[in-house]
Image (tube, rainbow, N blue to C red; front, side, top):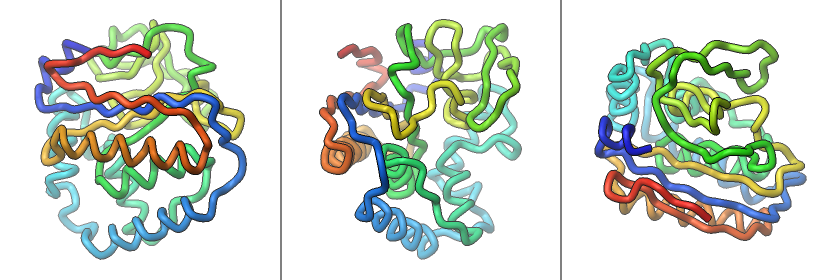
Length: 228
């Protein structure tokens, strides 16, 4: 991850490592929290000019910096907020996803997750070599990843394309997921303290509603690696 922090020194990454999670069923409290977060988004944002809002403009600048068109490819949090502003409710997927979608809306920043049972090598945020393949969430066809785009990867396997635009079908979280990694990506105006708080909030939700054991980490340019 060092090369990413060198290019984007203000980036902060929050990590929640979950084990022994019960991810089955729907929790009504998590659903209620999602509805409340959607109402808050509608009270504070409008579609017109959303791209210039500081929470999303910083990601658009980052996407442009690694030669990705931010009008075509939007960070996951902007895409989520746009869905809400168009009148959609964020549908239930599973409890882990519901929890991280809530945190994404609450803190206006990208959050995602991967099933650790499907991952065999160390996870790294890096620039793509251009010879990796990827199957997008909900898809069947392999895509060739573009050289230089920011990706979450495990060896040559791409877990998430264009930093936080699209996750992998193979490592997606399901009701059968027991061990997972949840990742919060943050750029200004969010600070390291904001990421510490959001990561703690996410871990609390996962512990309470999925009965999971959690360990949390916050990575910065000065401290950019961890293990557990």
